[in-house]
Image (cartoon, rainbow, N blue to C red; front, top):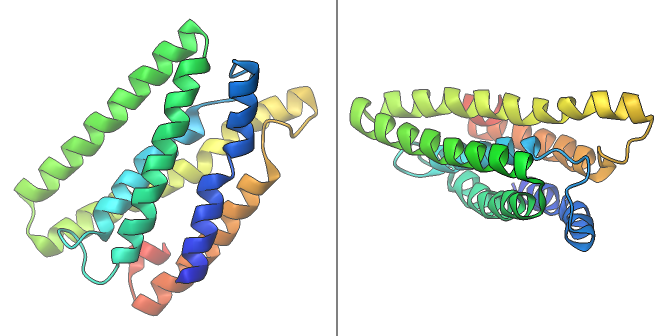
Length: 182
């Protein structure tokens, strides 16, 4: 699993050049904040799935996603700081929504489900959030086509996502954990 953790850390660090540019220019330019919001929600849900309250034996999923959640929160915060007023309000609203949804997931999963049902419930939510996270860069495709430039769709982010996905797929197969490999 160390390869999966390494690729996950690369994935979490891959936006650093983008955010250096945002901070240097004091503007989010045409970058989208949606991938970072989706990634934050995904990391929070996957972190919850990996904790013993929900699943046994996948604590590495919780640890790597807790680091990812912190990184994504920093990115979203920087995006909010340097965005224009309209985008700042939109991103702030999305951040609040993510935190509310995650709080609701914790509450519902603890109050309404036994351990086995909780694992299934949070596992399916985790898979859904992963699909959202991995689909979110597709919002950038329109900009890539319009500008005829991949500047706003970083190659290393795409590569790290692919490598991390392959690693976690293998890890999930080894653990026989459907929700990790799905």
